[in-house]
Length: 381
Image (cartoon, rainbow, N blue to C red; front, side, top):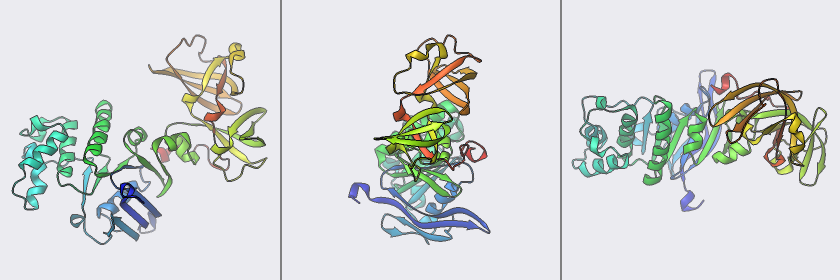
C-alpha cells in the first residue's frame, strides 16, 4: 500500500453483539487515509454501531480498530484522534459561533486560538457570522458550525453520523457538495454514515453497502451502481428491473438468456453468478434510465441487436426532468422505465402497447436464487 493509499482506519475481525443479537457480523474493512468513505444501509444494518466502534463509543465484542498503525481498540473516545459530528449538532446556545468552534481547543488548554478558529470559519464560509449565536443561524449554518468545531481539532478521522438528516431536501443537496469540498480541502479521512443512497453517491469516494450487520458490497459509487453484486445492492442503490431468466447458450463474449420465449443477451463479464453454464438461473438486471420505450407500432425502429421486451403501460408519472413509466410484461409484472424529457411522449399513456429496448452492454446478471425484491421493502427503509 503506497503512502497515498495508507490506511486511515483498519477494522480487523470487528464484530458487535448485544445479548443474543448480532449488530455487526465479523468483518474486515480498510478505509484509505484522506478518503471520503460512506457506510450506507437501512436502519438496523449495523452502520452506526460500526461508526461508534471506530469512535470508541462502543467496545467491539471481537476484533481490532486501528487508526493508522496504532491499535486503539481499548482506548476511550477522548484519547483517540477522532471527532464525531452527529445529526443533532449540540451547539452551546449561549456561546457565539466562534466560541462554539473554539471550545474544544480551549478545553485542551490552548490559549491562542483566534487564528485557527478564523481559518476554519473561512473554510466553512461562516467568517462574517462569527459573533452570532446558534439561534440566529439557519439549519445549514448550524451544521457547518458543528463541522468547523470538529475540524478545528485536526482529527485524523472525522466521523459523520447522518449529519444532514435534519435538513430539508434542497439544503441537504447543497450541503452534500459543501461537505465534499471541505473534505477535499482539509484532506482528513471522513467516514460518513447514511441511509440516503444519493447522499452517499454524491460525496463518497468509496461506499460500503451494509445489510444485516455485514458489508454486502464495497466499491466506488459508479462501480456499485453499474455492476451490483447482489439483488439487495441492485435494488437498494437506486432502482433496478430484475428479470427471471436462464442461460441458454454462450456466444463469444456474450451469454444468451431466455426469459420465457424472449431472448436476451448479457456480456459475459457482467455476469456475477458463480456459474455461466447452460440452464443456470439468473436475474437479468437493467436500470430504468437505460431503457428506451416506443409504441408497438414503432417497433421497426428498434436498433438491431438491442434487447427488447413488449408490454402494456400501467402508469405514467411526469416528474419534470423525466416521465416514469410502469410497464406490465409477461416476464416482469412491473418494469420501471425513466424516459428523459427531451421529446414528445405522444401515445405513451396507460393502456398503450409498447416495446422496451436497451443496449445489451447495460445488462448485468445476478444469481437467480436470490430474492428479486431484496432491498425494496422494510430492509430498504
